[in-house]
Amino acid sequence: MNRTVYFFSPLMIFLLFSSLHSETIREDEDILWGLKLLYKEKLLDTVGQEDQVSPLSGKILRKISELEQYWNKIDETWNDFLEKKLLFNEEGQHIKSIYYGFEGKKKFQIGIDELLYDELGQNINLTQKRDLIEDDNIAIDNYKQYIFEYGYNGKISEEQLKMYRAGAWNNVRKTDFSYNEHGDLKEMYTYKWSNGKWTLAEHHTFTYDDAMTLLEELIEEYFLDQVFSTHYIVHSYNEEGQLEKSVKHTGVIGSWKMNQYTDYKYNLKGLLNQRMLKKFKKGAWLNEIAFLYVYDRQSNLNKIYEKVWSDKDGWVDLKRTVYTYKRM
Image (tube, rainbow, N blue to C red; front, side, top):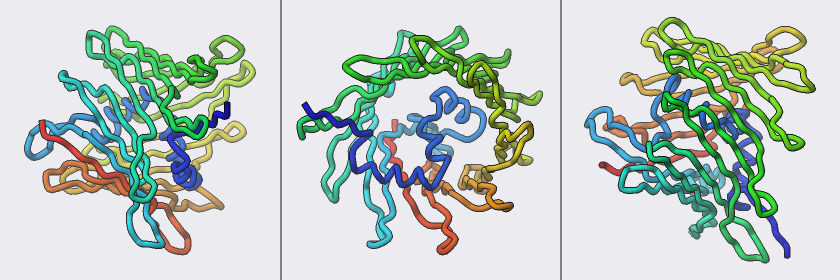
C-alpha cells in the first residue's frame, strides 16, 4: 500500500514559500497554544478569538470563518487558497473547524480540528486531522493531538503534543506552565520525548513590572545537560499602555546581540493597525515583513494583510486573511 502524508494538501506549498520570507511565520505555526493565550491577554488584542464584543455596538460577534488568499501578481488579483469554517455547539463552545483548499474555482475539504471540553467548559483536547493520499484516494486521518490540563486557577498547567504515526498517538512535546500570585504566566518548561522519557529542552521566564505589564522574556535551551541562554526579548509600551516595540536579542558567545524587532502601531480608536518586523543584517535594520489590520465601520476586524519587503519593489502583497462574523 502506497501512503504519502501531506500537511494540509499539496496546494499548501505556498505556505512553504511564505516561510522562506519570514521567521515570524515559522514561529507562529509552531508556537505553543498556551503562549498564544498569554500574548492575547497581555500584548495584543482579541484577534483570533472566536467570540468578541463589537467595540461600538456592544453586540457579541462570533467568528465563523477565516479565508486566506494569496496575491497573484501575474493576474493582479487575490486567489483563495485556504478556508477555515468554525462550528459551535448549543453552549457556544467551538467544537470543530473544517479546512478547505482550492484549485482554481474548485473547493475541497483538506482537514478537521475537533475540540473536546470538560464539565467546567475547559478545552481539554484538540485533535487535528489532515488529508492523506492513500492509493490515490484522499481521506481524512489523525495528524496532531493537543492535550490540556488546568490548575485550580482555571489556567492551563500542562500542554502535551502527540503525533499520529503507525496507527498510534506518539509523544512529541509537553510544556508545564506556572503563574505568579496575580495569575500571570511566570515560567514555562518544555520537554521533548526522547528514548522513552521526557527530556528538558527549553525554559521560558517572564518578568513584569508592578502593574503586571510584561517587560521581558528569557528563553533558555538545554543540550547535553547544559543550559544556554539563547533569546532575550524586551517589550516597551507607549503612553497609553499599548505595546509599542518588542526587541529580540540572541545569545552570542556570552553576550546579547539585537537581531530582530517588531513595531506596533494603532489607529485613533486604539486598535492595532500595523505590526512590522525588521531584522538586523549587514550592520543595518532591514524591513522584512508587515501585517496590516483593517476594520469595518463598527471597528470589527475585517482583514489582515501580510506583506514582504523587496529591495526592488518595496512592500509587496503576500497574502491576506478575511474574517466573517455572525451576530449572536
